[in-house]
Length: 425
Image 1 (cartoon, rainbow, N blue to C red):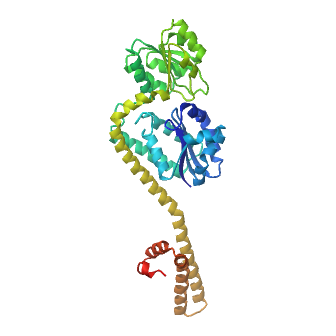
Image 2: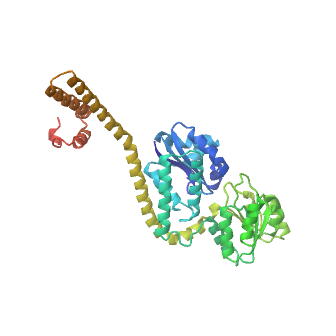
Image 3: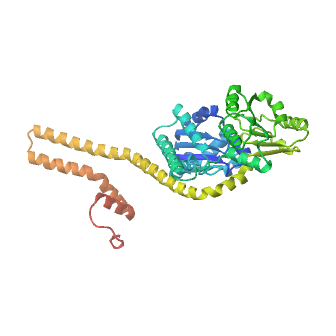
């Protein structure tokens, strides 16, 4: 068993494919259960965000080879369609990948802090459902340590940005000023809260928050001096909105092309900016065909994100070195843990042989046998038993011409001189 990560993200798959593999928070327990039913998988953590769906496992390496087929069966997708987008990392590479994700080094916006909270939440869900034990527990805790070190010891988190910030950056490029705008936020989760904070910093005061649960939307709206609505109020709200930013966990679009078309007519064709930050999408893709409606998805934010990367590249290089060190520390721990059982077994067997030899000698002495003969027999018997396996291994290596193994055994057993080419038959 070793750490394995399989998944897709914004660099390997378009939004249309990512939304096919995405799952809501309340689906996570079922996904964990499905993974743990696989005989090759013993631990699992699942992560689904707008930019990635990933499965962190402690599993037999063979499961990594069939990971793409498993994903295709799970979501009833064509393997040929999925295979180019799926990545699989094993061992040290898997540990390094998780730590890069937790530190924001693998995010669309380099160094964005939101992903760490999402990774922590995924880990907490897995723990609640008994899907993690010692190995993934250690790996994730080490990842959180790495993220904390990167945040405190580099400047990668200075003026931290996120996809939410990129959406506001987009609005600043389109509108001459943001303060006069009437903005509609659809959803009241963490991403919407970040958007609201960034808009507030830009002077936006006319804010509407539409949410499935009114109390949650009301809480967010009150914090920023806005107005709370239900999703059923969207047709009326769209008519008043200059800018719409959607980020819900709905499996189906909550804003249809017909609703936007009607709103534009009532607005007398005043333009409307719509930014869909959700995966699966909240706004029907056909909205982009409407005149005066300007729809952007998370994939469209890439150019803005690229501009934000420039000041973070140097810090990212320092952070990557920290991640490599933390991943190496984890893998040394894993190696020591993996060696503990066979070392313990080897020691237990030696102690068993010792105890059996001593017990035999004591019985012989109680029976009146000569003490010197008993001691000599004890030493000879115990020596033969202890050197039997190493001697056989040395003999087999030499007989098979495996001089590299022979030399390793010789050094391990600390005897004789090195074997050179002239010594070999």
